[in-house]
Image (tube, rainbow, N blue to C red; front, side):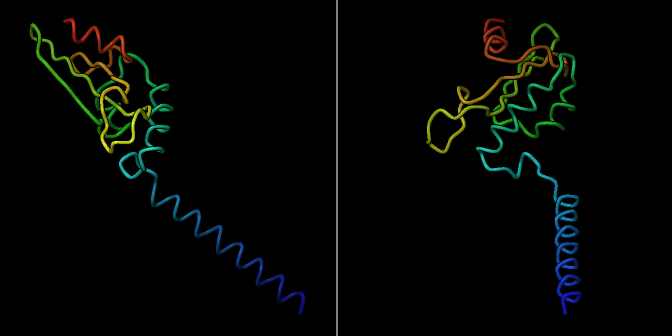
Length: 124
């Protein structure tokens, strides 16, 4: 009798472990599927992993679509700012620039991020 109970418990534990493995393998957590609190934390962590010179496509693959974006052409140079939500300011259901970290791209390459980068973009 004890042998049967032990086998059933072991079988249940193995089935549960297999289920968890399959869910984690086939349903990866994407930024687009996260709620706003998880997305903020995810963005903060991923932004710290960025390096200057990363391509726009690499950043999009890592962080997903930006919450806000701006772009302009200046003397044949494409300048784009992508904003990713990283801090909660007010509970109004909207994501605003003051709740985001700006990432500044020049000709599809990351050249700076943070509020200082955005201020330099506004001045140019």
